[in-house]
Length: 160
Image (cartoon, rainbow, N blue to C red):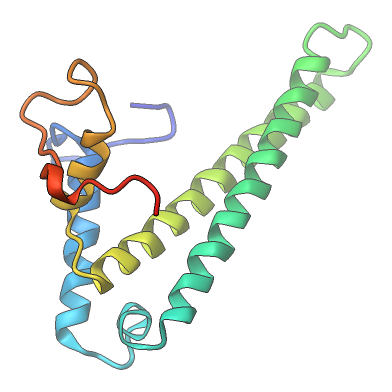
């Protein structure tokens, strides 16, 4: 785990943080779909015109790209001044804090992309196991997790 994460007191860590989190989020999205609550943002994305959710995926992906560029620029500034003795420590600390904040922003935007992507998958009935099988099918036997599902060969589609 990174220095920016923690497990709430009294809770035990799950074997796969990402797996458990994606499963929980996909479950919430599916439940909001079934509940048909017009006040729910997720339900509106699931039931409205397809363009609305697709625009969100594109918007959030663009924001990830911009946030990654900002994080790269901030990291480069830190690297460029690491050994500079003429720079006051306060300025070095400020550069490091900016780089840290840029990475926090990148993480935030990446989470937005994943959420909106899961909404699109739910909308088309693609569950996490099927999505995982698609990812696993792109890995070699030595790369994919032992016991990981694969896409049935008749359904493997690479490009259009």
